[in-house]
Length: 225
Ligand code: B16
Ligand code: MG
Image 1: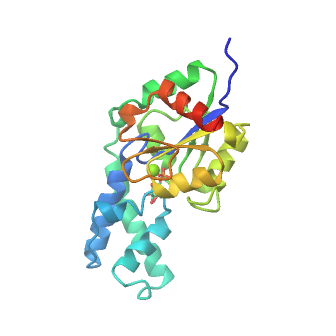
Image 2 (image 1 turned 135 degrees about the horizontal axis):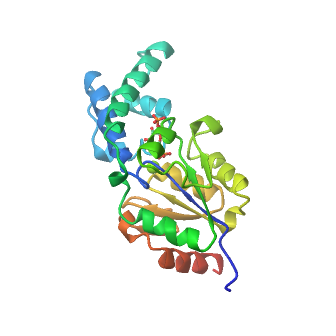
């Protein structure tokens, strides 16, 4: 049997496992509109992988309103956005798992490689339940388990530690620039899904292209470079 050269694969949730990143955008856009701030999909790239309160700060800065609200008012705004987001989550079903993801997970598991999930979302467990993936991952790191949001490496390093994986023998899959920075700061191999992730070690345009044999081949080239 071929020697195992990868310890684990750690997935991001929003934007990789399911398109909840779009629901985050719709909920933020509505809150921003109420504040007289206009945000679009290009601006939204900066919110991906960023915690709820940090996302709110970026939106307020965009409207030059960063000094206009108390902490308590900001907490109320973030809660309002979250309630709106949670309404979208009620519609989520296993049909909303991104194309190619279940096949990828199956192929990784066949080789006895651990899989983890690293999401800074406080709604991660709700999303996993809605997708019927709550028992799929060997370890899930969510907002409750880390102090620092992506791009800090804490979340991916926590996943590696809990999976007993050496970061250099671990692959991270992300759709956000903050997430790729977090993976690289962890010294892992970074797979980027999307068009704007220049720092990724291997890039694909969509989850459909996440093929295990190709990812392994790219990882091998990277580790042997
Ligand atoms: P919540 P990920 C992140 O999840 C999202 O990408 C980001 O847009 C969101 O603001 C953040 O979770 C916090 O989410 O408001 O649900 O706590 O990409 O790390 O899975
Ligand atoms: Mg994401």
